[in-house]
Length: 584
Image 1 (cartoon, rainbow, N blue to C red):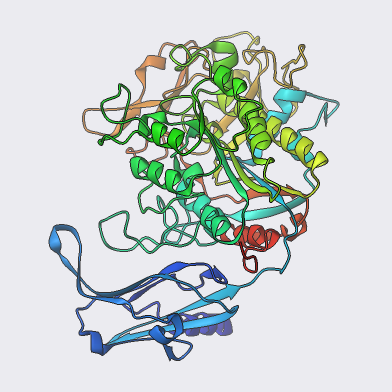
Image 2 (cartoon, rainbow, N blue to C red; image 1 turned 180 degrees about the vertical axis):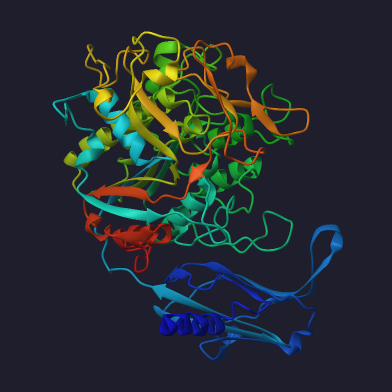
């Protein structure tokens, strides 16, 4: 034990954790060779430029990078508070793989960061990558989806999910640079850049300045593909397309809420296919429903750039067979409605947006467009509402969208069967604290719903059915549904069954700003008030720190194994496309 503690103490001293300076990229960063990034040093004190020493492997940083940094004698924070001196150098890169030790000295401030620069193979292993993200996808979502879609008898599943047969697997750590807990921005950013980030950050290291668009940038997947290849890029999501997960493919901001700016970043990157919700941030400010504050009309800008444009499923279908490789589809001003509302209950905003395509439809259209490019493509597909319905504990909606995501996996596998030079990756960006613990026998006599929860041998099997054979249960309000609960929650009324009247809103804000149980559910038969275990500023369940399960198949999939950080996933993707060695 003493030896271990001594080693930890030595490591702390070596990396300068006790020092006041900060270095970006951070200590332990992994960088793709030749990949551009911004270099920044933040000092807590005010120093003269000549008193600051910054070396990389013992050489002056300017010699290593080939140019000097901008020196800021007094970097300002909120209300012009002086934060200290800083150096920042934009758009630099390191060409040779290896270990790089960055040492900073300024008066009594010291800091050391160690970077690992990695290379890739000389030749690509695959022509295409289909990267499928179930936002918030946890083990319970997979289990429930399988039980609801296929049923079980004699203790064995009556059918398999398409994702069940992806033949390589890894556990993925999702924590941010500053916290074990995480959000969709920093998690997806790590997948798409190879760098860990802070909660809410996309494609940047979060620095101390209040501005959200000036933080030190790292290269995104889209930028790496544009720099080194002629491949096409596709982004498909059921969320606002400028939401955190799809935005991470292209974006640089400390604040994921910079959605109007993110649309500009999408336009600058010009992915060949962009399909999802979020048209409110594409419309200029004088158009009803717009959330922009300027007169930029991004839908027209995309048209002018040669994009086919669709706003309904009917229009999307009509675009089939177009000779254009470029397609923009925006099917909702906000997040698209979930599968069960679009197809069965007609709740949510389906009345306002009655013609929304399924995620599978968008995926198939994207594959058709992107595969026109003989150089190949990178396609990111997100099932967003697994997360968006797990937050309010609307489990049936979350699980039906998990089934929909599995149909996307099936479509990807069908494509890969005809195009074996395709790597398929399925993963979550983070998890939720959700478990399937049994069933609920709604026919059991009595009004106490809690006593109708069947656990252990009393659970039996749920009675979902798929008589029409479409791969989805025919109805969610069955006699013996699954009993699904969250490990964390605000004050709310547990209503036990599916939310047939519309998406669940468990809590509402009280007059003191704290969240309280939503009284609208108080009189639901059998409803039980649950006192929350979260701070009262939380209105829904939160993300879990549990590892994500990643599965993959195709060329390069064997590299996914054991435990990996999300930033390690990017290393595999980069190697599959040989992004370190490739030249456009």
